[in-house]
Image (cartoon, rainbow, N blue to C red; front, top):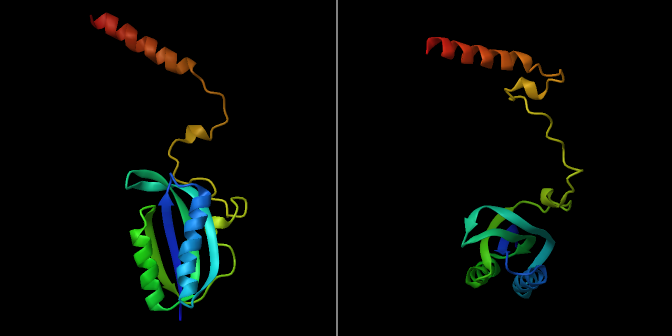
Length: 150
């Protein structure tokens, strides 16, 4: 038996309890074929990068499982037939990481991004008071030169 990681995205119209029921059904396919679910995570309702089948959001669920290839084929077939599943992906992994995935970590636990170095507008970081008198004077001088030319 081999280890696999599987992620599927369910439609946004489906409730989270229905998504859990779908995940139970998919886990049942693996366990009935003699495999086992090592880890299961519900990542919640997230915004998609682009529309998939007219959906802008989706419920994400991730499995780490140990199963044989025949059970995996049946798992993929059932997922493909389920109209509530927008996308799914299964990949073979070497070992199961027991720690929570990056998606499950709290934002406070994630490393901070830090300031942007490519900011070209220095006035955003400038704490000095702005002198708008020079700007209004230049506008007045342009207006006076236009009147003289006319």
